[in-house]
Length: 227
Image 1 (tube, rainbow, N blue to C red):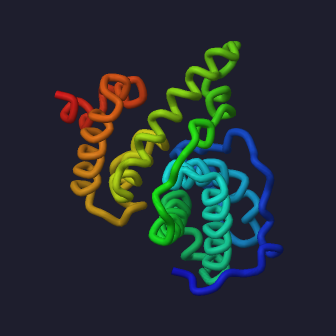
Image 2: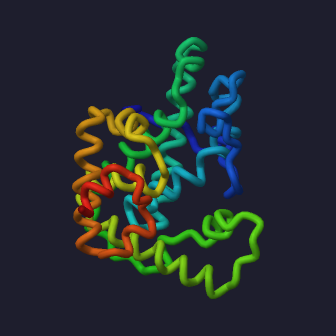
Image 3: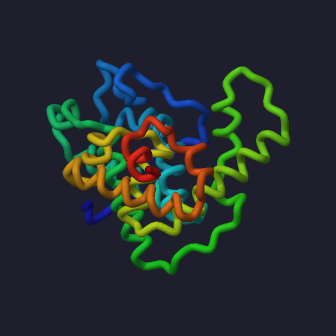
């Protein structure tokens, strides 16, 4: 945990961006020649701010909290990078490291706040729904329907205990693998799978068969939990 943070003016925060640049290994800023540093921090923010905001929003159910969490996470990351040597930065697994920072900030905020009361439109991301549609024209009523469905799932996620919510969000919303989640949460893979499994069972009781529309039935934990 970083004990202090630089003034916000030191960090080149960018406005919301579209799709992140993704390299072959699935890490947006992890091109082979890229070494994260304070001088390349604008690129890191551009690549990760949207996904970290989405993660924080689904963990807290509050837009203002999510924005502050991401801001704080980037401040901490910026300061930490400034303390690292080049070899440390070269070996840094940037994506899980950033998620871990964001998760720690989120946990601290959740400990000090009451459980959220969330409006449906506070969660679902219409821009993401439009991006996921690719080149196909999307009818407004389709966007509204999908928006409501995603919001319903995300409201259900907020009913989970924090540790289950983090595992389920990373797995089913952010699409992280079990090893990636284990690294972010600093937990054994077996613990991660157990938490995801328990989360699915709870979500199944809340959402019924609609859960299968958002969680691929090829996922081992879903097949087991719904059997």
